[in-house]
Length: 256
Image (cartoon, rainbow, N blue to C red; front, side):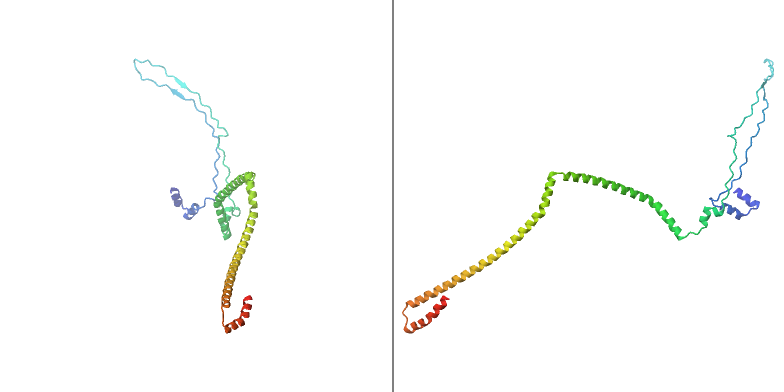
């Protein structure tokens, strides 16, 4: 805030300041050129003089002569070249507007086709994990089906090699022939049943015919007995004459 206030008091325009603050982050900025550090000579140190402390004058304490201690001067420190500050590289040159991809992308019109492409890419990126999981599940399912097929094939081979199963298979192969024979026998039984019914009807007819013949024979016998009774009696002349006239016609009818 102090820097901003300083700029305002120094006479800079507030609009230019807002433009600088609103400048996007992706715009490359030019860093100032760093100063090159030079090796500064170290001056030689002067020999240090150390003065020994003196005691206060006392009558009972003897005084000793003062002595000076000299220390050797320190040697100059050499800074290696690798430890020296290296000059910074020159900043990147600003990219022209015609070659800046971001500026071109922002300035180019956003069409419906571009939107559909971006939406399809986003959907594909979201669905990629789901598709990968689905493909993995399909692969596992294929492997399980192959294992199941191998197990079923082995069991089928064991079943086909069994002698009892072979006998059952042979019997089952002959079942259609047996079925055809049963159907033929059933049709013959139906024909026999129909013929028996016809024979029953004929027997009933013959029985009725025999009964009718027997009844007719009994009637004829009764008539003959009656005629015999009448003939054995002594009729009158008129009755005898009528009987003689009607006897030939009656006998001819009875014989027929």
